[in-house]
Length: 386
Image (cartoon, rainbow, N blue to C red; front, top):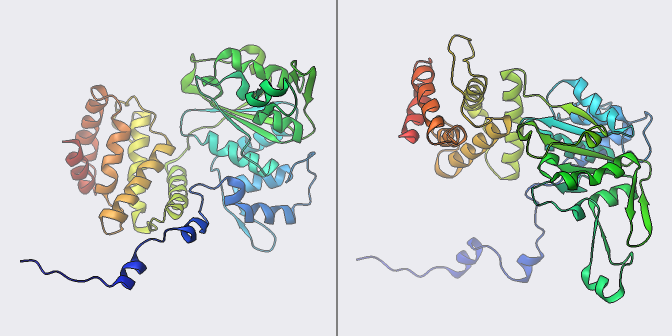
């Protein structure tokens, strides 16, 4: 027979989440703040010590923008954290492109931080990374040019008040940096809307007999996935308006481990997950698995491997480790272990259940099973693969 008890109302009210007007008034924390908000202190510190020439309407000089992206120590000891780990020259070329009249196209395989770099460039140059057009197969011309408030359009006819500017139009008028994500996923005829914008620096509004002219400081950053070649390739006329910078995958395993560990730490703090200093070995194993399968050969070069259909990018490694951290925090002891990342790795590798499953099983048996110190990882992967 179970015992009944009377709960203490005061204790219950202390444990229950607040509700009502007081809860509604509580400020909400953004799950993922924009770059200019998340790193506002670094941008402010850079602006205070930045005494180098700045292009028109730039918040920082090109040198300070590079320091913001690549990291460094400022006079006075303020440390700027790296946002991008990669060749410095690539970052310098991208920044100097934005200081010219040519637009910037960041090209690379999925997971090479194209969107991340684009956002941080816009945040450092213009102080606003939100002037964004997200490219999809359904992106319409209005997303790049302008749209209309149809209630006002019907009531008053075409007017400036009825016009709804696109992010690109706003950037032109205010001398800011606009961003276009996944440019090659946008239909070709919509892509070509950018030709006049980038070549003539004007955006005609024929309904009003007007145009918007870009003011100093305007430029555009586009990203494209080179796995999408053949989807909606850029016309030669549009491609000429861009300076293309290819973002490579991390050159070394150490660099990739550093990227994953740093980004997982940032995500973990925003999600209230515990830090994972003891999980560094698991991060290294995830990166090793991804790099070996991606490159088709083991680290020592002795064993040739089949590669799965997926990209196994650095971004996917970050996702796997973050998911593992959540598992260890909510269903384990808070320490990242092999069993926490095994399911995530399986999901990342096996995209095609027929061909990728064979690739994964062969890798487990031929490489992971025989690798010293990986027995726990092998058992965890076998368990989720069964």
